[in-house]
Amino acid sequence: MSGNQELSGPDLSQGIDQGSLAEGQMLVGHAAGEAVLLARSGSKVFAIGAHCTHYGAPLADGLLVGATVRCPHHHACFSLESGEAIRAPARDPVACFDVEERAGKLYVLGKRTARERARTSVPESIVIVGAGAAGNSAAEKLRRAGYAGKITLIGAEDSLPVDRPNLSKDYLAGTAPEEWIPLRSVEFYQQQEIELLLKIRVESLDPSAKTVQLSNGTKLGYGALLLATGASAIRPTLPGSDLSHVCTLRTLADSRRIIEKSAGAKRAVLIGAGFIGLEVAASLRARGLEVTVVAPDALPLGRVLGEALGRAVQGLHEAHGVSFRLGAHARAIGAQTVTLEDGSELEADLVVIGIGVRPSTELAEAAGLSLDRGVLVDQYLRTSAPQVFAAGDIARFPDARTGDKIRVEHWVVATRQGETAALNMLGKSVRFDAVPFFWSAHYDSTVSYLGHAGAWERVDIAGSIEKLDCAIAFRKGDHTLALATIGRDRASLQAELALERHDEATLHRLVPKSS
Image (cartoon, rainbow, N blue to C red; front, side, top):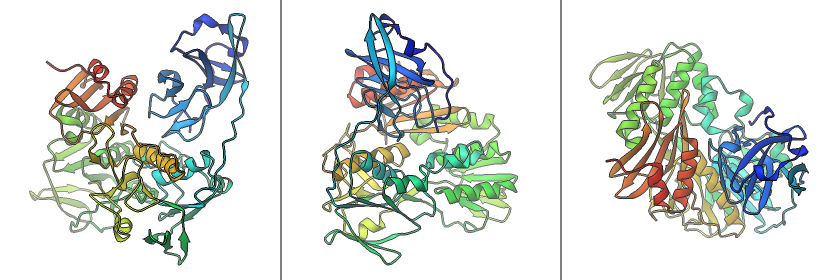
């Protein structure tokens, strides 16, 4: 999705003065017709492709951390030494170039060939249940890590693994092409020798026998297994909730259905003012529909982002024509109306319900795994059953900063957990200690959120929420639990690093304590 990039800066194949690149600095140029990022870290100078392979963000606007660079938009991370994408959401590497220092100049030479990885076939086979963010990333990571054994990736949906965040954003708005949505092609899975089984459910798991029973009658054995069954959209038991113009959004089929229904609709009602509901509202406004959001909350996103930012997000949507009925509950849905509990009616020929998801833990529960509002895992994402791991929306894992068990329903977290689980299925003993991160797009503004704050004592604000240029820290005492930013991508990266390092001094510098 990075697309073609315009070339700028010096021709690095012709050399630049060595003194023009100081320690910790990055410089963009080009060589052999490609954009190149030159970076000096420690005593070494590195040259890699200049743009993130996720959505094409300029890596020079990101953050240099040791021998890695982090993308400013969605916090992917690349190795400067190999170009490898070492942290989701990017999956593909950037190009890596040789650099030579000669006569006081730095020259970027040809591309390096990828290094061969050591191969392993232990365990003999791996089964991945769920072909969403966590499952797909695990399958890919296994191959990138040199695993040569059998991989079976099982998905209940009828589509290839998809870029799920786009289903409520650009794709739904009509600004992202269809080819963006599948994460990989059929040919990719064939080339990687990943057996992809679609429209098939795992009906039972027997951890003692190390087998799974599939809905097509097949029984599979495994050496290690990853549960990545995700979550399903909650549909309330409202009268009329089963009507043909009432939709939820979780899958590609759901997004396509909303697009189809919106073509003949004029007025939409969104039930729920969470991230999905508001992103759908923005997308339907882009399609020209009149949109009303109904929710019991006093403010949209107030429980997650706080009062000030929640009010600003509401104002942003209202400025784009969205109406809100807050502090309200839907009582019934009719063919052309939504009736609220106070008896008032809203015209609607399209209704989208976005009131959250429910983790799909039925398989784990039937197999006797330990549960607590999700599948309990340790810091290595191991469940209570030997050689069974869990990742993504179903996993309740220990927060590396607080030790509390948390469950996070976000794409980047699921993708990173899939990568970590893959390494641990190969016996690597890698802790999952990534700071939770997600982003939510609303028109031309994007909210980035780091950490986890179920409750907080204080909200500190740097910048202007009204101008949508701010960083907001959610704190308990002097301890920063989470941080949200709008329009401050670099501050978000700096905060992520500070949260990883438990560096409160930097966090308080980025967002000082309010008076």
